[in-house]
Amino acid sequence: MSRALLLAHDASECEPLAAFAQALGLPFDIVTITGDCPQDLGAESIGSLMVGDPPPADSLCSGLRGFAANYSVVAGAATMFGKDYLPRLAALLDRPMVSDVVGVVDPKTFTRPMFAGNITADVRVNADAFVVSVRATAFSNPVRSGQSAPMQVAFDPQGVTKRTGKSESAGGRPDLAQAKVVVSGGRPLKDAVTFERLIGGLADLLGGAAGATRAAVDSGIAPNDLQVGQTGKIVAPELYIAAGISGSTQHMAGMKESKVIVAINTDPEAPIFDIADYGLVQDLFVAIPELMSKIKP
Amino acid sequence: MKVLVPLKRVPDPYSRIRLAPDGAAIDTTAIKFEINPFDEIAVEEAVRMKERDASVEIVVVSIGSAECEEQLRKALAIGADRAIRVDCAETLDSLGVAKVLVRVVERESPNLVLMGKQAIDDDNNQAGQMLAALLDWPQATFASKIEFNDGRATVTRETDTGQETLEFPLPAVITTDLRLNEPRYVALPGIIKARTKPLESLTLADLGAQQECRVAVVSMRQPPPRTAGRRVNSVDELIEALRVEKGLLKS
Image (cartoon, rainbow over the protein chains, first blue to last red):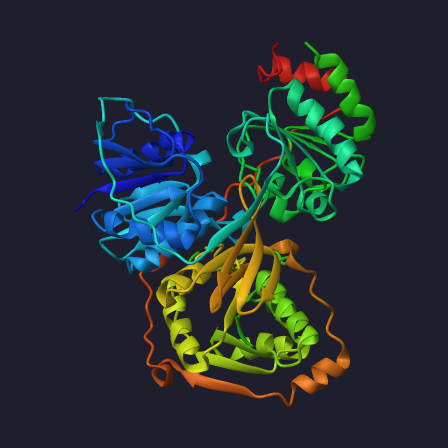
């Protein structure tokens, strides 16, 4: 029973989840909800639930419940997808849950941010079986070994919720949460076209993803799935360029683990400069085009 | 239609969070408390439902000591009809909260539980989903648009890659995201009216509930502050610094 089940939405989440399980020190199996799982991440068995989109949370959890009950620890990534269904699964199993884990202190004690990242807490689970959501940015480079055995997962989803519509933002850029470079913009970008031209344009030149502040999303300048912050995406890229972003607490909670932070802002007092490695006090409408022209390959 | 809105008393999101001297909790001495902002969005949404349909009844509930009556009164001032405080001075984990809320749901029989997607203190984002699971109700988390028609809800919700629309029968649990609405400022007549609205206090025993907490904070610390680097005076200097000092932007 002392065994972990790693539920990855897709192949891209398998590595960080395997790194988490290795830190935990338990044998583990990996099940991807959709798509295949790499075979060399040290899992004993690997399986896959389906091709295509997973069903809504009520169906997904009813289907996973019986299978997941065989494991002492069930872990998934702390994405919006994971945050939707993992707590439901935990309650169906009558297990407590720890959210947004960024570190393993011991097999039952985990480090996680609270209060928009203003506090780092160690929390202890007083139960033999529990559920965890893991911040993928905090775990990487699992020890690669072996060849995992294929595994069949009994999955019979039942639920009353129907998905009647879906709209996805234009793709083509790396996933925000996993990109090596993130270029983010705030409300000074004015409108969606300007945002795409400057923020999207610079992101494309750097092979990175575009991000946005809550204010930019609220005012329709950027789509909701680009929001970086306490309640949006948590990112930790090699390079984070913040253009026209003052640096609210809730925004900085989503990006302050970035390795190198560049801030471009006309206000020399903006809080973002307090955490930036390089601060450029300049109008982004001047600086970004110049940056683009000078780094153009 | 009856709507139950659970809400939590949390530190004002704009307050500066510091550790208490013992390092096991945050220093609350200079902190103002508010309704958790996501829960306030839930209250606002319920009140807008009531403004469209006068037959909507809104019950707000909070679990905590007497001090959280301040937040319940504010919800009444926004437009909720009555309030319940479940007296509990002990800490509950999210599953413990969900189990208490199950008892409140059994007592009140709402058609809908509308609540914030996460509390901005613990940032757990669990209780709504857990409540839906325990009740075996459908759920829609991170809602940015909610419509009702003929005993069914249609919810647009935010996802990792954009948005999706879910449709399901009531009763259900819906958790609110930022863009669902913008809560109103409470006007004075609402505050005065709220003083006479019913606010009932129940114990866990009254509800047949228990205090459950299997996830406990053992220590807290403030993350080391990230220190400011330096100012650069031009784009050229910035590019040079990133290339030479950090090995970035190499093409």
